[in-house]
Length: 272
Length: 276
Image (tube, rainbow over all chains, first blue to last red; front, side):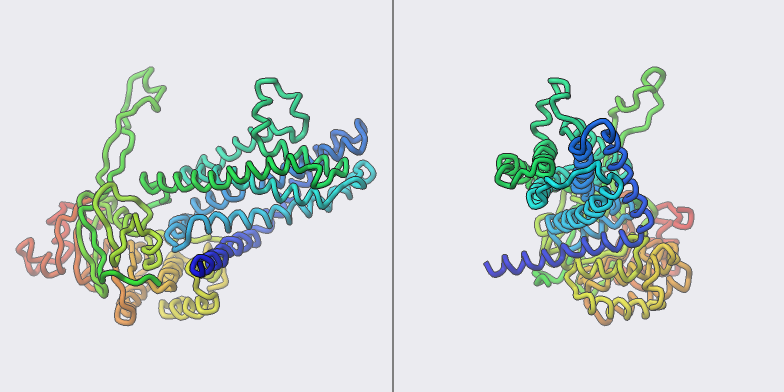
C-alpha cells in the first residue's frame, strides 16, 4: 500500500514536467498567444453582437456563453492533441516515450496543463467581454458557483474525448490535427452551442444526446441566465460525470492502442 | 534505480520488417486511384540479428544509410516492437518489462530532437523531471557535462534554435548522460559535426567509459571512430550482421591484415560509406 502511495506521489510530481514545459513553451510564443487570445475575444464579440439590437440581454448572453464555453471545452479537447502534435514535429516524442514514466502520467500532466490554461484564458476573456457589451449583457442572475462546478465536471468528459483525439497526431503529425478539428466541428454542430438542438434535422438530433457539450451548455445557460443551482442541475451533472467516467479510461485505452500500433509500424520517428 | 538481473544486453534472432506500398505506374484510368494499389513490398530492416554486449563494453555497429542501424537502436530503446526474437537488457525483456528497461537506458540520436524554442537548460530540466532528478542536481551535472564537451555555460539560457548543430548535439549528449544510464545507445552521435566537436564528443565517450560503468552501443559511419572507441564491431547490411569481431579480426577476415576498416567494409558490403 505504502509503495502504491509512493509511486502515485512520484508520478504526480513527474506529471509537473509537462505543465512546466508547456508553460515554458507558452512564454516563448507569447506574441502568438496574445494573437490567439485576441481572436477568442473577437470571436465571442462577433457572435454576441448578432443579438445586440435584435433580442434582449438574455439572448446576447445566451450566445456569448456558447462562444466562451465552447472556447474552454475546445481547449480541454485539443490541448493533449496539440501537445502530441508538437512533440511529433520536434521529434521529442521518442524521448518522452523512452522516459521511465507511465503513459497515464504523461497524459495526466498534459490534461492538467489544459485545465489550468483553459481556466486562465477563458477567465481573461470572460473578464474582458462585459467591457464591450455594457448594458447588453446582464450577469445579475448568474450563479457562478454552479457554473464553476458544471465546468469542472464537464471538463472530465472533454478530456476523455481529447485523449481519444490525441491518437490522430500520434499516427500522422501532418494530418492528425485536422482530424481532431473535424471531431470538434461535429460536436459543435450537434451540441446546441449557438442554437437549440431542436432546430437540427430529426436524424441528427440523437447525436446531440451523446455529446457532453449538450448537457454542459444546457446547465451553464441555466446557471448563468436563470440562477439555477448545483442541485437543480444534478441530473445533467450526473450524466456529464458518467460520460467522463466512460470516456477517460476509454481515451487512455485508445491512446495505448494507438501507441502500440505506432511502435509496431514505426510511426514515432521523424527521421532516421 | 532498477536492480540488474544480469550484466549484459542480449539480442536473440531479432527481426523487424516494414511493409510499404509498391509504387507502380498503372495505365489510365487505374492511375487515378492509387489508393486501390494494394501490392506491398517487404523491407527487412532488422533480419535475424543476435548479439550480446556486456557492461563496460562499447559495441559498434557499422553500416551504410538505410542498413538497419537506427531500427536496431529503436528496437532496443522500446520505441519499436520486434516482429520476432527477444531483446533483454540486464535481464529485463524490452516488451514485457519496458518500464524497468527505460529506467536503465538513454539514447543520443543523429538528429538532436529538442523543443527548439526552449533553452538548453529548459530542455534539460524537462528531462530531469521525467527521470525524477532534482532540478538543482540536474543543472549542476548538466553544466559540468557541457563544460567538459566544450560548450560554454552562458549559452545554456539561449534558445536551442540559436545553437549550431554541433552545440545541439552536445546538449543531446548531456541529456543522455544526465540520467546516468547503464545502457547508452549512441546512434551516429558525431555525424555531421565539425572535426573539433567530433573530437570533443569522442573524447567524452572515452572518458566516461572509464568513470561510469555502462554498456554502450555505438552506430557510426566513421571507421576511425569505430576503431578507436569500440571493443567489438559488427557490420550491418540490409538488416543483417554480415561480419563481427574486433577491428583486427575484421581485417583478418578479408585476408588483408594491413587494410583499413573502410577497405574491409567495402570488401564485405560492396558499398562505399563516402558515397552514402
